[in-house]
Image (spheres, helix red, strand yellow):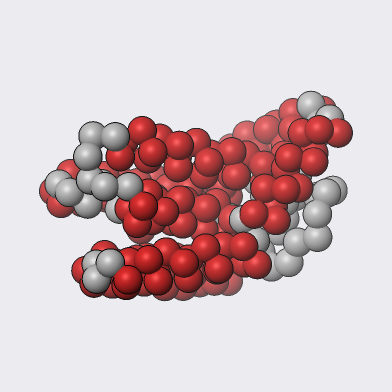
Amino acid sequence: MLVNQRRSLIASAALLGGAVTVGALLAVPATRGWVQSVDDAVREFAVQVRTGPATAVALALSLIGSAWVTWPVRALIGLLLAARSRWLQLTAFALSVLTSEVCIGGLKALYDRPRPPGSLIETSGASFPSGHAIAATVTGFWIVIALVAPTPARWRWAAWAVAFAFVMAMSRVYLSAHWLSDVVAGAFLGAGIAF
């Protein structure tokens, strides 16, 4: 990650392409119904498999992915990069965060997609894309960049970051805070921006 610039750009383009594809499928009336049917089926399954412990974990993840936690973690990442005089990476980090936040607000306003019914948490704003999925992906990526040296071991830590972003995204579906397509697009967008 960020060591091989060509590979990072190819990965970024593929991930952003995935986000654009999901967004296009939702925007085009001919495919919107198909996407919604998949979203409905996944939501129904998530409601059926709810348990007390799983709900507690999902609620904890909702707090971890909130602005109350994400922004202080991002500030620490920025301070760590600055303290180590990693100015290029600090600039890339700041641009990743700024771009992701602009995309969250802009795309939510553009799509204005209603949230799923019966959310277990209080939500606000439109559903598409998932801000939690985007923020978890961008922040997790940059935690790895800031804390792990660019060695082969970094890929193991990157795998943990991917796993965290996946679990965060799925917790949003579990809580009926987002549709599956919201979190898939959010994860693709966050990863594409971070790369």
